[in-house]
Length: 147
Image (tube, rainbow, N blue to C red; front, side, top):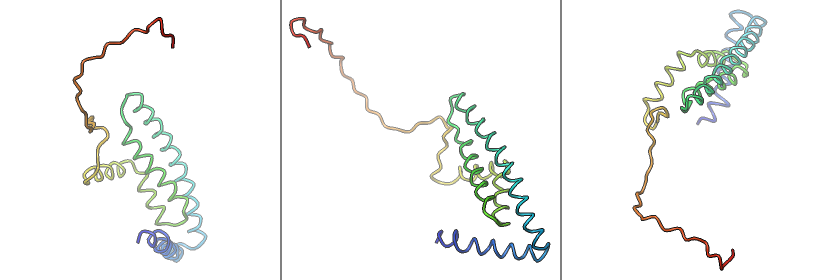
């Protein structure tokens, strides 16, 4: 089913939206609006991507896992891909992904879902086995038997 949505239904919805917008504002204006949204959106993606990389470096310098910054980076890359695709629906979705407060809302929503683990919790899950053995004596090399 996701294949149909991604490659058949979504482009048809984009085409329908483009026809509707062209009917309201005209073909040339609609095309210019799509070009302007791609240019402005590309500049915003570049700026936010650079800021996210700096935040990731800062998180690494502080010794923590940049889970939130990685999520922001993923959202910014997804917004860039959506801005490349021509269409008004994809542009609206991209703009929503570029709004930091909406990304924060999406992060908190996903953290509440089952199966989500917070990387910043400081808890590392794992198993261990305690072995109480006496240390073995290290034998000194015998001078009569060269290696």
